[in-house]
Image (cartoon, rainbow, N blue to C red; front, top):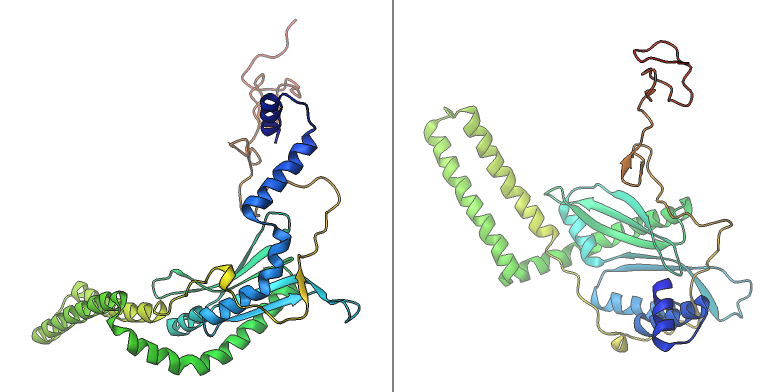
Length: 314
């Protein structure tokens, strides 16, 4: 901001306040990136477009309750999204593991992004659902558990649809490539199996381990292919979104300014070392006196007891 202020004063040869430059910069950012407050009014249309382009998707919007039903506006609180393709992929992965995490958002309307991830057959992170909430609390995570229960009910009804799509998509390029790799591994597996039959169980432990590894990799590839078979379809431009018939207008979330100077340093974990200006912490290092060479004191608090150095004078 200071650099922009100096450049404008020098270029225009006029004096202006720093606050006026800040307001002008904010207006320019709204023209380029859009107004954050106005974007919340299109959120319901975005949800309809998301449901149309990605069948089976579950979206929930929570708002703050108003004191009167005559009020035609509602204030945004939370949104939960679980895409249909991710539901089917998680079901096909056959690994009922869910990891939970969250991170902070910066901007005019800060909040937190909560995520639920699983694991694929290659131990890679597989996203399942995400949410934008006001804060990470018991209430916000409880809604996530309710969303997962709703997802489990939908999965039972969509299994037949998934199987039919799997049969129809055999001729797609990525499916053809995966099928080729799988067939290659299965052929190699048959060759190894024939060699085992010839040797009649006289294989070495190394050969037996290799055979089991090839067999396991072929099984993992099949599961991995089924997990990533369903795709997430892109959305159309905002001018092509359907219009929501909800009678309530969605407003931007509430923002509370905390008392005191805002913290700029990131909160560190318990097991994370604390560093200052690129230097390691001296928390667990013993101080050595430069005069008496004793540990536990420095030259300012040196009393001159013992040590190999000469103390005193006079």
